[in-house]
Image (cartoon, rainbow, N blue to C red):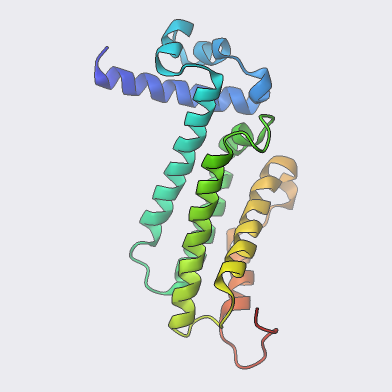
Length: 198
């Protein structure tokens, strides 16, 4: 098997796996179902992934790495902290909405602790991105002073709440623009009428 053929097969497998996991959940999905959807033999599937756990974790890590890369790329040339925060929120929320099947696939029944180290690493990276934007905003005088670590946790929790709503209550979704307005309205300097600083 040549390298290009192997890459194409892996892509087909991962695309099939997302659809199967989102439709049937982790417990309901089988390697046989994924192989059939990917139009590959079950034996061929096991050439790439040793079991369902391996495939699921590879899928999770790949999608989270993809989002991390897109975030880094989107923010790299933005100097204005308010624009950077708005871009981060818009990208993050739109990515979740556009890739709802990934949220369904990764949010179903394997349990919260399944792949926990991959999730923790991703969550830390995302909070660090937010915290860096906050620090730049404070040092430039764009944002009011705050405990950047705590505020980053709050903002990231808001984003995660949006993602949970995609799965549980799609009607409760809010727009990235409204989210950005709300967060920036609490961060931008507007005189001395602030809520007590953290």
